[in-house]
Length: 288
Image (cartoon, rainbow, N blue to C red; front, side, top):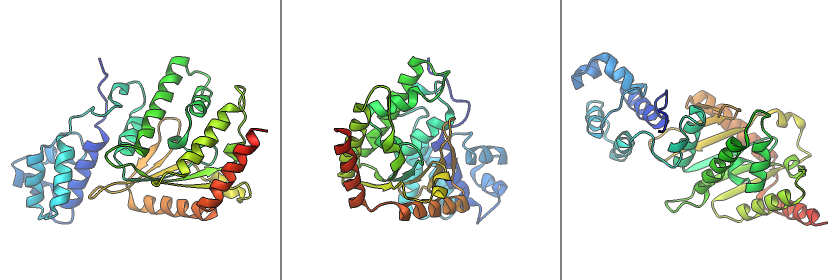
């Protein structure tokens, strides 16, 4: 039996947060609750994602708040009605951290993603062999079974690049030092990985830039980050990676800071055509 999550799903929290954004400039939570015939506690828990809200209640609240953005109301109502635990990642609840599940769900719903990792190939572009090398060596206490599960998850996440309902727009910054990786299993791992990067760079929805070795080392101290953008009315999300699945923020000030950091790194990276040329040079060298 799938273990229940100890915390509410990320979409339920985002529904509540969006309704709170509509309410706060207009009225106190107690006044809004009275309009719905609720107590203040119930509204507070809805806004924090602890209680589920129906699509009809979303529409009623939005009417009380004077929201006339029908597209936004439809989107929020649809999200409110989605059953918890949906998505291909549902069977992994209780087997990976809630933070990681949150990130997977956010990633799956994003329209555009910008990603930078200062050391390794960004996850959405990792080949199967490379992902297996990275994940199986990630921790000494990781069992083979768990490592293979994490590999399956990482590869399943890559469906965002070619999904039928609109592939995500990906802007990835690839660190050139990652192209120098050597593995005990031989050079085939990196050959396949560089081929995968070249293939990705030719996709119309992928913008790939290599951050060259000549970049000032100060920029390598900036940690791995992912910036996700969504269809209207959802606000962007910033994620800073760590071994527990990452920390996520919707705070405008923090997002502005992460956005500026990414744009600075992008300005230091090679243009897309030069990046592709460099990748082809590496691929030729790996055959020598």
